Image 1 (cartoon, rainbow, N blue to C red):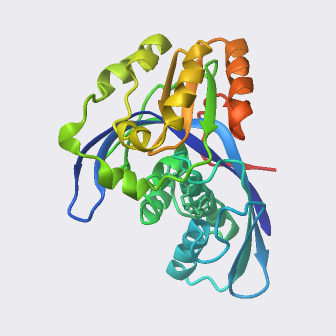
Image 2 (cartoon, rainbow, N blue to C red; image 1 turned 180 degrees about the horizontal axis):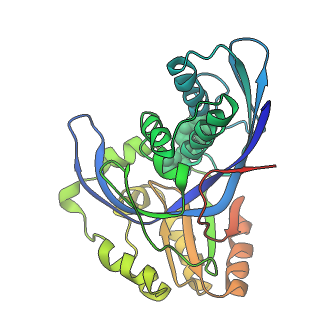
Length: 293
Ligand code: ATP
């Protein structure tokens, strides 16, 4: 196999609770992850020479060793003593530094892709183990779908997720939010409201989207929204246009709205596009990394 094409999907969080901090600095979370059908396309091609080359249509990501995709390829290359070179082209569609795990899902795709290209024969759980060394969200991104993520995000329990009929409108304002800073600024003793994940999971199982929307909580939202007025502004456009609920994803700054009526979602999208460039209307997906072509 000389080349492989992959889809690398984004996620949103339907809830995030932060329970504590480990000695190594990682936070202990309890959160609901949902893959959405917004994806980057990656092409991995074997090349002559013993190196890893990254190309992309995006000016917002590094094309050197700092790209998480480079790190993913390098881990496999070193561990399995691979002497072949690869070029990885990243067609970016997922907003960068958005709270949608764009980089993590690219890394997940490269692990899955190189496992095939280099014939490594690694199982899904072995790929997840390697993925965890690259980032806490990488194991989830490999399988995708819907999951309760615990531990530092790597302890995954599959759950019944959002129905594919739900219209998901995501809007990434043009501001830069550092995930590290958001977590560091969170004062766990001052959290006003925490999600009840067991009840949310039960409601997802019953397709009770109204309950989910009325009870979604992301404890990181207070931190990011206190610094950037855009978070609440976007939510208010979503709600004014009859979203069933709206919340920030990850550490932000992306905000999503859930609509049972597509016409309302389209109206909200048009209104958001007046002030924001990155607005996408998508559905949920039960797939993570996908090999195609
Ligand atoms: P998460 O939700 O996992 O916190 P995110 O969506 O907030 O992720 P990313 O899009 O993964 O954030 O980007 C975070 C940082 O990583 C950016 O500053 C970006 O420059 C860098 N980065 C490195 N490689 C990539 C990549 N392949 N895709 C996106 N960002 C990358």
